[in-house]
Every structure is written in structure tokens, then in C-alpha cells.
Amino acid sequence: MKLKARPEDFRVEERIELPRGPGSYAYFRVEKRGIPTMAAQILLARALGVSPREVFFPALKDAHAVAIQYASVRGAKRDRVELPGLSAEAVGRGPRRLSTKDLKGNAFRIVVRALVEDEAEGLAGELMRHGEEGFPNYFDEQRFGSLGDEGSLGKAVLLRDAEGAIRFYLAEELRGDPEEVRTFKRLAREHWGDWGFLLEHAPRPSNLRSVLTFLVDHPRDFRKALNLIPPRLLSLFLSAYQSLLWNRILSRWILSIFGETTAVEVAGEPLHVPLRVPVGLRPRLAREVLPLPHLRARYGGEWEGIVREVLAEEGIVPRDLKARIVERAYLSKAVRPIWCTPRELEVGPVRDDELFPARYALEISFVLPPGSYATLLVRCAHARALAGRA
Image (cartoon, rainbow, N blue to C red):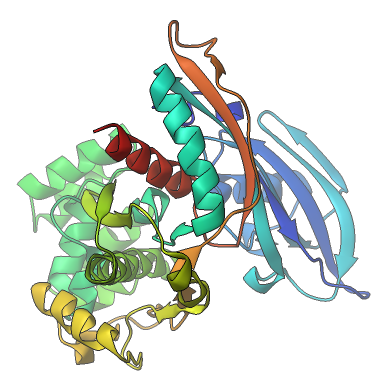
């Protein structure tokens, strides 16, 4: 099975309710192809003659896709932008910048490729069953680009290990790092503590240089160096680790509730997916929410014991769930539904795959709530289809 064989195979469009009333903010409908949202922010700001701080996207979208999303811009000097891979058009004005609360969902159209015939038919059937039963609302791979193979900056922050967090930031290769950054991080591992040497070899421009410049003059003040990392980036590291814990908690609960499960792999971890969801359990799944782990989160019933088990395996206790050594980044206090049911689900016929000879393709469309992952729906259905063939 292949997803995103080309960007147009994965199309997502935000559904949004724009703020109403007069104001200084312009709202742009932005279509991008193969561009990360944060890069789109910079490109749009440059084209509109404003600082990137004045451009705000309420959600991030996958770079390997065609994405239609919305941005608020204050002080925009144009109503339309046309750039390679990105176009934007003003669709209204209002009194404030956009918020995640304005988002109502995401509509997807996806082509799944490189399937053998019975695999494609099984996938189609399981997708339709997921339309009735729903699927676990795990965070998917896109959430975990800031995790490394040797730990997590977020975990180091929670354990108040400032040097460990800085070591992770400067020396741990991450999935999304370009080759230039990977090369530097290999140097950082070999020359740890030689801040002047590392500053000479750090990529330009990058925030790595700000941290290293400080360490040249304050070679052991890792806590202050940590707080030179941009707060939004620190928040991404924290949320990735928090999401990893949340996934583990939900997976363990699913294993305790359902008799038979299969698994999907997310960020290198197998997560349980029930093979069937009894009708009587569906109302509970539809209403149950699970707090992301943080200091004041409260868990009742069977959840409490599972949370403590998961934290203990990480060497963490509940009082650690506060980012005490950073000043402007925090663990989210949100709650997240444990289950997701796609709406407006349509599954096309199995057809020949024009990109992969002797293979088959399947086109599907559906709508998910904000924060749920289309890739996860497909992968859960695929895992169940494979389990059915075994």
C-alpha cells in the first residue's frame, strides 16, 4: 500500500467558520502543493509585505499533499498571491486572527495505490465498516516529526534535564531534518562542549546558532540556552512527547476492553486497533474523552491505573507533568476524543493503478473532525484488512 505517491493523491481542505464583523484582519484561502505550512507562512508574508508574525495559520497541514487552508493576515498589502506551489486569495475581513476554534473539520480526497486486488477489496470493505464503527483517534506520524530515535526533548524538559534537552536539540537527528542539519548534528555529537567550533559549523540561518552563541559565553548554563529555543518550537517538542504518552494510554485501554485487536505502527510503536466494535460499546466510544497528560489532569475508572503504568514505564510520576524549566512553552491541558467516526465517507471502485503496473488503486473521500488523521483511518482499515486475510 502506498499513500501520497504524488501530492495530488492526498488532498485536504479545511472547513472553517470565519469570524464576522469589521476589523483589521484579512482572511486568505490558501492552496499549497508540496509546501510545509510554516514555509507557506514565510512565503505569504513576503508576498504580502508583512512580517511573518502577522500571518497565522490555525492548523498545520502535511507538506506532501495538496492542502487548502486558511490564514489571517494583519496589514496585507494585496488581496491575491500567485507563487510556485502556492496561491492565496482574500475571502473576507474580520476583527481578530483565526483560531483553532474556528475550524470545523477537514475534507479529504485520497488515492491509495500499489494494492493487490484482494488487498484493495478488503481495504474498501474495512473502510466502509470504519464508517459505521469509527476508529481509535490516535495521533499519527505527522505529530511526531520532532521525536528522535534516542529520546525526546520534551521528556528531558519534564525531567528537568536542561543539558539533556540541549543535547537533543543540537545533536539528535530528527525525521524532518535536511541533510545539512543532519551533518551538523553528527559534528555536535563528536565535539560536544566545543561551542566555538560548533558555532563555526552551524547552518546559516538557523536558531541553532543563537543557542550556540550563548553557550560560547556561558558554556554550562543549559537552562538559559534552552529558553533561547523559540517557544513555538519548544511547544512542538512538548506536544510530541505528550501525544506519545496519550497514544500509549489509549492503546493499553483498547487492549483491556476489546477481545481481538490488530496493530498499526505510529512513531515506531505498535498501537492496538480492535478488529470489531460491538454495537453496544459505540455510544461510550463516541462520547469518551481522554485528557492529554499534564499536572492537573484527572483520570477516573480504569484510566487511572493505566496512566500510572504508562508513566512509570517512562520513569515519570504525575508531578513531573509540568514544563518547569522553560518559561514560554507549556503542556497542553486539552482533552481529546478517544474515537473518531468519518462523515460523508465514499469509497470508489477498485481500479487499475496507472502509476504501478499490475497493481490496483482505490479513491476515497470523507470528512474528519479537526485534529484527527486521515492517514490513520486508512492505515487502521488496511491493518484490519490484512488481519482478515491472515
